[in-house]
Length: 307
Image (cartoon, rainbow, N blue to C red):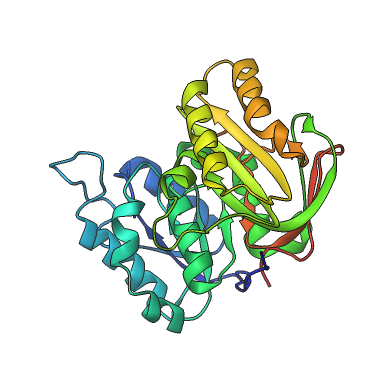
C-alpha cells in the first residue's frame, strides 16, 4: 500500500463547499457549523440540496441524483479548495457510482473531510483519484458544533498540519508493538459492507487500519470483523488503530470482542485513539505514511496531512 497524493492546506479566505451525500441535515446545526467555518476566515458555500429530505425514505438528504450532483459540482468548481460533508447517516453508497470520476480527477486534488457513512467516499477518493483525505468531523455534526476540541484539531489540520503530525491515544494498548504503513479505513460497518464493490480497497496489506463504529452491539462488531477476516481483506495489515465505539454496549464487552477478533493477527493494536463518533473527535488523515507505536499510544505521520 503506497502513500497517496496530499492536497494543499487551506489559507485564509479559502472557499469550502458543504455537501450532504448521506442523511438529512438539521438546519440549526448546519448554521452553527457554517458560523464556525466563517470564524476561521473561510468562505463556506452550501450545496443546493443540503437541506433537502427524501420524503419516501425519510433517511436521505434528497434524491440520489441531486446528492451526487451537489458533490460533483462542488468538487469540479475551481474556486473551491475543500469539500466538507454536512453529516453522515446513510446514503453515500447510493451516490458513489453516479459520480463522474474522470471529471473529478481532471479537477485536480483538493481537501475532502467526512467520517462514518463517508467511509464509502474516502475509499473511492483513494482508489479512483489516488487522493489522501481527512477522516474528521462533519460540518453540521453535534460532535463538531459543540466541541472546541474537535474544532481546534480540524482547524490545525486544515491550516497548519505540521503542528498535528503526532496523534496520541486516550486509552491503552490492546496488542503491543510498533508498525509503519499507510493509513486506511474508517467505519467498520461500512468497510465490511463495501467488500467486493467498485471503488473500494481490495485489501489492507501493508496498511495501518483505522476502525470505529457507532450503535453496533458486540455481536454485530464480531460479524463485521469476522467478515473482513474470512474474506482475506485483513491479510498483511501492518497495525490497527481503534477509535470510538459509541452506543456499542459496555466497553469491556466491546474490548473483549476486538481483542478476540484482532488479537490473533500478530500486529500492534492501539485503542481509544479519539477519532470517530465521540466528543472532541480528532481528525486523522487517510492515505498518508505513518508509524504506530502501540506501547506509547502514538501515531506519527511521516509528512503533514496536507502539503
